[in-house]
Image (cartoon, rainbow, N blue to C red):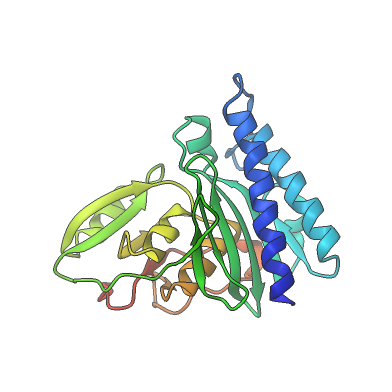
Amino acid sequence: MDFDRLIPVIRQLALDAGARIMEVYNGPDFAVKSKDDSSPVTEADEAADAIISAGLRAAFPDVVLITEEQAASHALTAQTFLIVDPLDGTKEFVQRRGDFTVNIAYVQDGVPVRGVVYAPAQGRLFYTRADGVAVEELADGTLRRIGVSSPDNAALMVVASKSHRDQATDDYIGKYAVKDMKSAGSSLKFCLVATGEADLYPRLGRTMEWDTAAGDAVLRGAGGHVVRFDDHTPLAYGKAGWDNPFFIAYAPGVTLQK
């Protein structure tokens, strides 16, 4: 893959999809449907998916494309592929809470090496440059290199899911010395760790690879790690069915608990 070509394409597609999402978000009431797994989907999800999929297929026709909103792609198998969640955090979108993102990632040999996460309602755009370094693009177009914190294990900043918090997650967080907690929706949680706004993000709940790949790539580019909850080995991609195990995203220096 030519990363000098990839990054401008996925950045622009994320912006284009985000603009369409915001048209729906700021418009009159929109319909919410349920998918086969009972998760919600709106016209914004579908419109964003159409924009991104068409753009990626035109630019990279020979690369396998996996996208949440196209069930036929879920039957594919690959270790190197593009993977898309056109609107991560649909529950946040439906409730007009703003914590939703557009996610596009490139996975190479099971590792998410490049990605973009765009939170259009918050005006925050994170991505990996062609060289793999993670940046946040500011409103004036300047790029700010981002990097993880130097955590204090006696006073950790923890971020957890806004819509999927449960007792098991709270019990696990209770094993750490926590200075402060914040809640966020969607893949923004990875980005908060990537910028040093949080040290630790544990996820003890179901996710799919399209939910995590772009945020994982950004966090890796910022010096962070994403590991399986059970054995603390790196979270791998290209798994059968695209399901993730429970995982922990964190800044190096956090002493992980079992």
